Length: 125
Image (cartoon, rainbow, N blue to C red):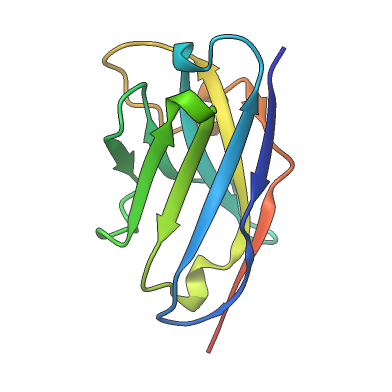
């Protein structure tokens, strides 16, 4: 029903920036809440950002205003702009989707039904 493909990962020095993109293929993109998660080896999947149909995202506590989650609904695309990256930001970043629910903040991986394959982000010193 839904396919998600992340892109934009890579290697960046600490303090640098990356922008990740998530391409959504399916029906009624505007009817899905979208999320970003990340996972480092041996750790649980961690919430990064979420967004509803509008362009205002919400973020994990560690973000501290460094990231911006946005969506271009006409292009079925969600972006995650990451600035001032830290070594501890290293991990595989996943795009996720779930049928839209109004007024609910979705921060748990179990809240989402669809997942991309992930894109690797490596932050070096």
